[in-house]
Length: 403
Image 1 (cartoon, helix red, strand yellow):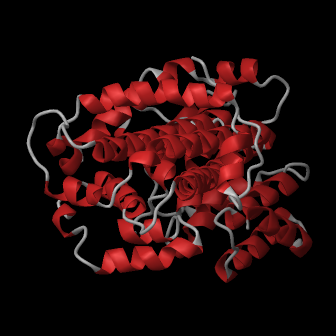
Image 2: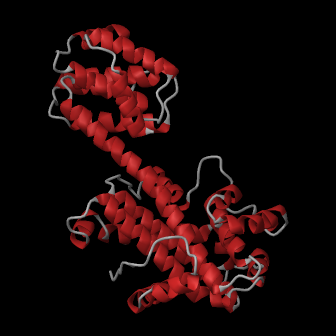
Image 3: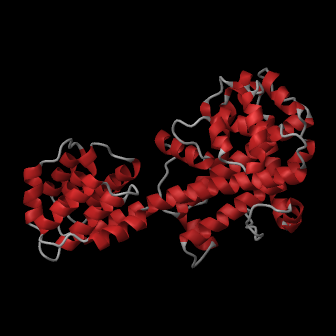
């Protein structure tokens, strides 16, 4: 595929026209080719597809199912040789934001305030036959969504976080990351947090009115994305520079949020591999870390990820004896900690293995961002059982790393 990386300054636009001029002819030509592909995709949609949210399901396939087979870890190694993941992730976010800005400039010439009403009242199962402004609306909606999906896929690949599009949970995870959707968050609230302060008063006015009243039946993702674009199209006095700025800002904000979350998951994967590789007794590690994590009877998301990747690493470790595999299977179904077994396993740890087990327990306590009083108490008990000094300096250092 022809993919060109932008090299413009990646800050929020002070003078959007300067940013537009800074885009190279090659970049603009690439975006025009992509818009032509999007226009063909849009031409096969009906108004009912748009209003029902089915357009988004179709866009997922159009955006990703071939792309993920072409853009993999080997692709990035060849395209960005000798660069660490963070540097390449930043380059992909910059590229996506720049392309979204260019597309905004190309599409916004046809913006009209009547577009929202057209989308809200139109109907029918025939292909879209809306005015030029409406067609630009759907192209802009599809293109920015397409870019954010691909950008998030790129970030997940670069950080080595597996996302299988044949797995509904992984697909939903990708969608949430791509569009900044959090559990329990309404589309309106999500959009409010995703735009510069100077636009928020306009958005509040729109959401307080009846502009979107007819759209409440849309599925959550389609509704969220449609609302977001309607807001952009109904901002009074919208101009090409403003649309360029909003597209750039929203795409960059989505990329930065996906980067933070996927990078943290990559850290958890690395920590899990390291803990298992250094462990004197992997079964003791699993027992102790479950004891620590389960103390408050609530397993938070990052703790769950740590347990998941620890178990995967333990299964893949060199110790594949029958007893070890039986323990792993029983661990997966364990509800309460077997303290008698726990103390027995802790007592078998050597003086060399004790500091590594203690450190792994501190990581399990800190992985969700804060070590609780209950977890600190358990760490003290563990240090005593292992014949170690309770190391508050180490605890503070690890807590800062995971905060």
